Length: 432
Image (cartoon, rainbow, N blue to C red; front, side, top):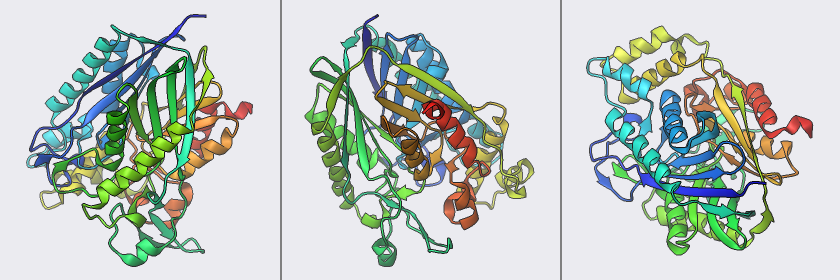
């Protein structure tokens, strides 16, 4: 049996001042509160290398996601299908959709969404960092699993009554005391940490939790926000253990119950995530590892059939100088999504035997994460959302009927069964 090795890499991903944030819908970069990074781990020794990467950006969609995966695959001597690129989803950060930006470039007066030169530079720097990391890999022999509850961070942002009537949205920052007083709602309250070890020496720790990672944004101050800051706090205190953090299925989960948007809340939320990371680490148990599997299932999500989501309507909004930045940007994203529909999205699974990581696209509702856990109750299951962000939100079918914010901007039609089928195949749940 060949020895297993890993390499870790990090690179700079901070935008320059003046760069659009959150797709250009909010104030552009005016100051840098903390640097943004691309972080990754390369697993070697069981077939072609596997690369897991997470970027402190808001989203990486469609061709942008594929381009980043291609670059990392080339650097790692593997294929793009064996590379997963995710976002932490902080909002005071870039949003990358190169095809959408090309539509904007062709439209006189359209607001910019992404500096394509910045994108190319960020991709190249991460690929160069990966290539350098392969010069000195570490043998690993075990994986570790640990989990802990997160106290007073996550809450469901969709408030629905007992009859299924949508009542209100509880955004990341919620000032309305009545909305904050409502119950937490459906969440996954646990943070999970998967780690890699050389015997009894830890090498890397990858943490997963489902919440929109925003305390406040829109002021032009670039930040990885409270989840990225919690990861960095762990890195600072455990310098020899490479730390990564992935946002789970948080499409309908925010910190809105526990956050009114005041600046004082960012370090409070950071420390609550950090405390859970420490507790999950303390609870970690090691298991020997001799091999792994990487499985990919293609997922095709259909387009919306409403006229307002069609190409003609999107081109009209994009060209409308009176439309808002968000409306024109959304129109460009919709056109980019329609253009890539012939290429499926990859749903991937890293299978370590007694532990698995499921890699999902877009902004899936937390119901998908909970469904995945029910599918494989026999394993320690981590879920990373915010992979290929092309479809945007991925609500449940029921949510489209209920209404509310997310279904009004989701680019794919109701497709819950398609998602669940792809997840089940990737997880080999049908065999169980």
